[in-house]
Picture 1 (tube, rainbow, N blue to C red):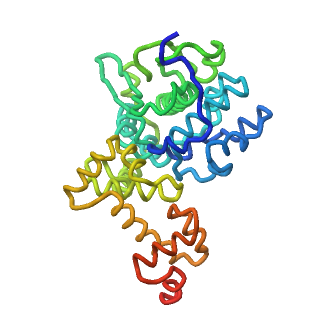
Picture 2: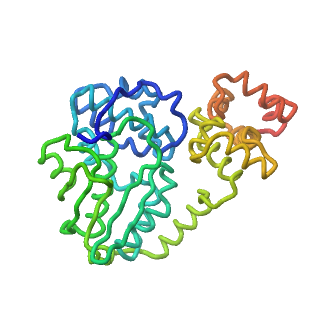
Picture 3: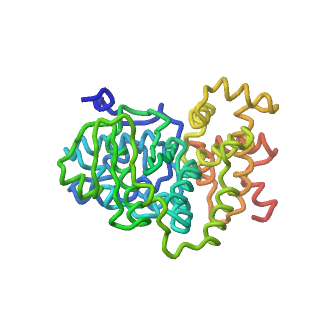
Length: 349
């Protein structure tokens, strides 16, 4: 058994593992699956601070470590080593959100995969997709850049299953492929055949899949270049690329993290893949501190939320990462010299 395959103890609560996040769509099918296995999904989700209705908010973000540990603990305690494989079959093609629209409207299979590689940071910054064109075949390497828990078999198998299903959708059910996994075999052959429908090699030196170059050249039926262009423009305008100024990227991460209560200097530094001191030093070159950027984002979001008539002040406080409304009130007074309630009344909001 390879070293990466030795499952250790998975902690229940991810409070000290804040950092990289993933779209909540990754939990698609989890509640249905666990209930189908005769267990209560809330029993497991609550241990990682994940609300039971998270699946219904696919564009929200949850800590990647909590997502991975949730699957591992569920599989271990229900004695279902094929949990990730089962989850694959319950996931829809919209699990990667707007990236799926670009994929479906690309000209060829290879072009679609290159779009996934380009925009995967929109779904999660933890997974880097590397496409290697090797003459008569193409290798797609899924490079997990943050090792947040002992080797997460379930997440790896669930994720590769989604990738392979996309390949069959784009290239046709007859497309020849093979999968490479870093870990040893955890389930019977039949379980892998049902989930993947292709050859699986275990204990490899890389994680991903391969297919003939001719498959990559296959054209995608009913692709609409205009739809693809519109969605690419939307993603480029909404999600900052890695080349954007650091202060803008910090603000973007703060915007995502504040509503789920994990926004801090350390969390943002983790998400950006750098030490907090490095983050502060590089921001200083722009004349800023990380906490200043977070506070500016809080201020902007506070004003935006206060313009929404149906939002109560305690809800706004939570969306801004405060555990108590009183803390929000104090911060708001420090920023604007008035209380949120008075601000709302004066602005007739």
